[in-house]
Image (tube, rainbow, N blue to C red; front, side):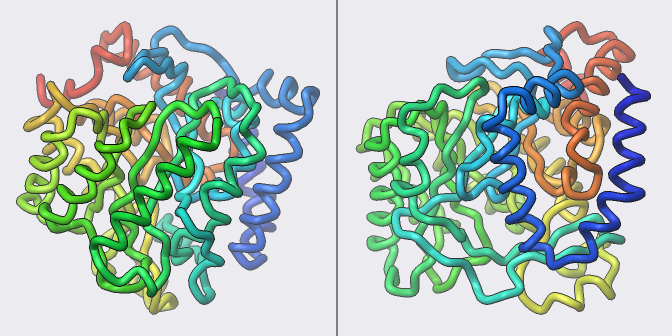
Length: 375
């Protein structure tokens, strides 16, 4: 399969990506999702795609929170914010995928540009500000669906200047969760996105007291699924520990995700001329990689026996995913790698992880998690 994946990667890099990168990024994204939705609806297309990219590896299959993940690789929130791809994801090799981020009220997106490319930096500028149709409208088409891999719903605060106080923000987020609970959709988990840096206004949940208020309100809902918290990477270790100390007081929080977009425009992973082209927005991909790894390691060292960790940021290869797993991540998520490496990437990572496990003497992913600290 390595040869096949190499051919697919070369074809994507040499022809497909060059063509796609000639067009406006948001338009390409909308078109790509539409094509993916059509492929996901076709039994023949799913069978053909799965024949090349969907392989089950016992070494990668794991059960967490009562959910079976056949691969530790998931689609992160931010790509499928209209819930069009759940049927296709497992046939690309994904073990899970997140819809959203969705909000109680719809939002049409921040002023353009909402998306931009930094090819030399292997990064995307993201400035959508939770563009979505609202929880209820987005989930309604799936209320009778049965998913063949775990699907989660990311929920955040509606990006509306009218939500001006912490109490209003908490009430809005709670309403989003209530909408999802009422939807009847058979999704497997929630993500609580407290870390999007592209929202208007001064309301935030980075203050431990504010986060405590939010989690207390959500706890009162008695949610039927586990909750993962999407964390920032822009805070200091001390600030992150303060947030984690609050999270640890709420057992319904099953995992934390490290993390969200890079705000530091002086990060050495950037080519400065590329960053200067985008005065607004924040950044995904390679500039998130190092800090994500650091925070995974920090969380695993302090809380790894009681809290699961999901790694997100700068995954372009099996080696990148493996590094996050060895730092302490039980699962990982990606988006930007797909844009730069191609749709075969997840299958490549799955196959590559199995080979890396064999090289290092691990029979199963659970043996590799946190192993960089054990050696």
